[in-house]
Every structure is written in structure tokens, then in C-alpha cells.
Length: 68
View 1 (cartoon, rainbow, N blue to C red):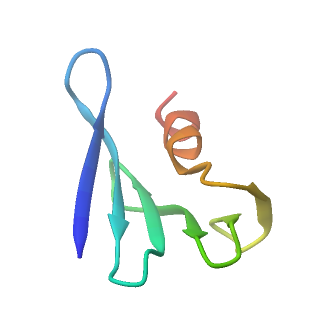
View 2: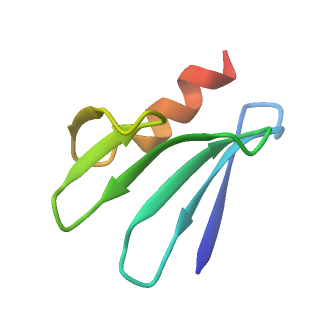
View 3: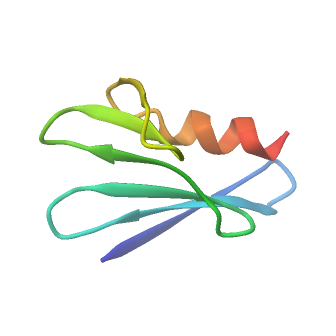
């Protein structure tokens, strides 16, 4: 399992993206609340309520949205 941290321009952690062995990714904000997930098999990103947010990986944008 890989973990990638996202930081703002002041190097504060604003979120993270966790990737499992199948390629699925889960995005979490700075407080470790789940903000969305991405499944590369279906190429869909879903929000924290499992509603379809779009195609392709939109996780970074979802984390930035919660950081503001």
C-alpha cells in the first residue's frame, strides 16, 4: 500500500492519497476524513457519499476543495 501526501504552498499537509495493490485510491483530507475514491478499472471517481463525481482521477481536486 502506497501513501502520498499533498501539501500546500507553505508545506502543510492538506490531504493524502492511499493506493492499494489493485490500483484503487482513497483520498483523505488533513483530518483523515475520506473525501473520495478512484477505481482505475471503471475509471470513475466517487465522492464521500459514493456518488459519481466524474471520470478519471479527480482526487487531488477533491482534496484541494476541502482545504479551502
